[in-house]
Amino acid sequence: MTIRPAPSPPGDPPERLRRLPSWLFNRLAGRSNRLVGAHLDRPGRRADYAVLASLEESGPASQAELARRLAIDRGDLVGVIDRLEDDGLAVRRPDRNDRRRNAITITAAGRRILADLQHDIEAAQEELLAPLEPAQRETLVALLQTLVDHHHAAGQEPEEIGGRPRR
Amino acid sequence: MTIRPAPSPPGDPPERLRRLPSWLFNRLAGRSNRLVGAHLDRPGRRADYAVLASLEESGPASQAELARRLAIDRGDLVGVIDRLEDDGLAVRRPDRNDRRRNAITITAAGRRILADLQHDIEAAQEELLAPLEPAQRETLVALLQTLVDHHHAAGQEPEEIGGRPRR
DNA sequence: CTCATCTCAGGCTGACTGAGATCT
DNA sequence: CAGATCTCAGTCGGCCTGAGATGA
Image 1 (cartoon, rainbow over the protein chains, first blue to last red):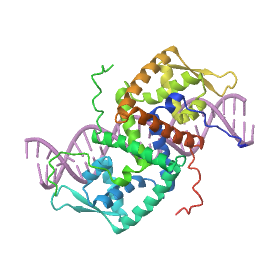
Image 2 (image 1 turned 120 degrees about the vertical axis):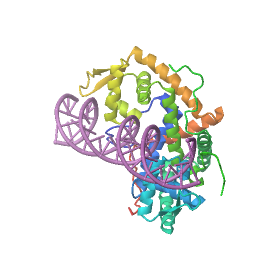
Image 3 (image 1 turned 90 degrees about the vertical axis):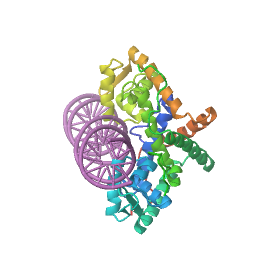
Image 4 (image 1 turned 180 degrees about the vertical axis):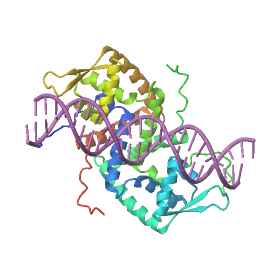
């Protein structure tokens, strides 16, 4: 057996938490972030991946459109695009049809970095889902998608809590 | 091109994100927190629920033990216990067998509040999982548990990234 | 005028790090 | 002495609000 002098054995979470979806999601989000962070060169690259992936998949877009697609705050997105531009991974150009907008476009260098990020992030997913069989992974992703799609469509609002008395 | 008058329709996330477990977990954790927060009277009550549930389920425990079980930072736990004590929901007592430790115990009032929290949090789960059938919910929770158990046991460490060149 | 877009400024929270005092 | 526990202080990123300037 492991002779591990175990300085601090984990200790099991209460059953009520182990069955609580919101708690499980939070634990796994935290683990995901640590894992992805460990596989990425620099921190903060998580938003970069999302933006670059969206630009490559759907072509140039305004910042507001990206914010809506990725559910990132518009204000925070300003800084992300700033960094991408500084690194030459994307460019801000005025939109001819609507001069309020910036048309954000991915560059060749951006596509290259995106491929690197893709690789690192996939490695992190592998660790994240390690204990699951391929079929289980598909089932899981399908269920998660259903939930995300549902709430994404329903908007971010707390969605009116039924006439419940606001104690 | 699209003359879309719509003020701000959601806008679909890129397919690569829609299939990315770490992204899905993050989205759902955020949604969970907003939902639970909306159902709870006061904010910050999320950690309270975890602590009270653990105390009721397994009896008195030290702060370090609670931190390990709930994966909450020891430092942050100090403030949580402070609040619980101020509200009379738990008490700190010196541990006779090990004077470094505080034995945290749930009070009668704590059990009452716990029942309230339980109710509100379950209502939030209902909204969170709304689009899923009961059988799907069970499958989902089982898969999430498998992952959380795996990573909980493996510790929180990034778990050594194989000899991979640290680019 | 109303509304959308981009930007900046600031606040809040949760997760984390580091250090010190106490005790085993 | 090493190691565990509790506490406090401070950092950092994500998420949110509000406001201003520009333009549809």
